[in-house]
Image (tube, rainbow, N blue to C red; front, side, top):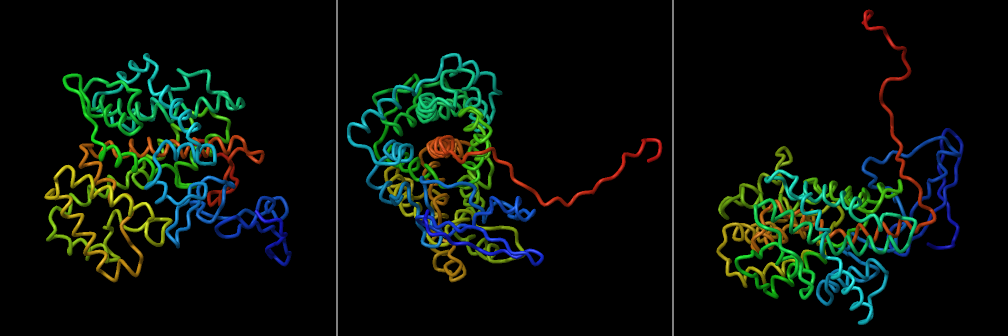
Length: 431
């Protein structure tokens, strides 16, 4: 933030209050309202906190107008093209790209923590056989604090570090086991000779009767999915993790809270909703009907996978994801897949329609990621768990940043109360 002292003037009932203005390294200026209630006796009203900065951060920056996403200053398209997920994890966690020796050490530490405590197998088996994988993940991650007591003291920097590595390492195992449990197959243990994405794919699709050979194109596509979803600034689930951690809760409980928030269809379920929409359309000849419905302001239907809450231009992640989609679909030879045919034609017709281009409703990352995951063999119930695996590094990085922030205080949003004012209790016989 700039040292230049600037202020905004706010007039309330004839009295003027001066509020400091902070200038970030990127993005719009911020008016500091922390002392507003103490000096003026009023709150601000901002449902959804869409105009409120709840913290200062050095991790991720989004410019929605430009269609720009930066992790520690590095563009997401460069990271997805030239880097890989664990290197991006290091960048988010520690602030800089690692040297070869640092990356080797980090990968070794993550690989050494991929297994789960063996007693957790019984915890999985306590769920109904048809439990949704996200329900299992919320429960299992929350229960980790009962199995890993030596990394729950948030005041100890070393325990925070151990908890961070454990979460990054074990989340793929938890997600894969949740999937295996939901389809009635035995758990596959992680293998230390495989990279992060390959290990996850093997744990999901290998069975004892025959081994699973990981195709490098599929592994690369999975790694890109992880990378492109790694962090996205102060979104709903990240804000949930920060709010939970502001109370001093242990890291496993905070991440479980983030997973629960991510489960919402308006957040982590967008790629599943997009795929279900493509399946509802069914065939390319029905696309004009659905485009007309999307343009009808009186029709609640909307095209899933187009536009974004933050990006008012192209989603910078979508271009990379589309490239992966083309590679995966070519490899698997499923160009004639009905859902894929609908997706390709829908993209073509929407981008040729001035209604969508003028409103900048371009395909986003969710439009392509669901197609890739289905092509790989994942059911829609696994789309959000895979998102959770990806986003864990973002949650952990934001959590660590918040814990070490000297300005940290417990979250306590205010409200605009519209209920009844003071009234006396009425005895039941008089009502």
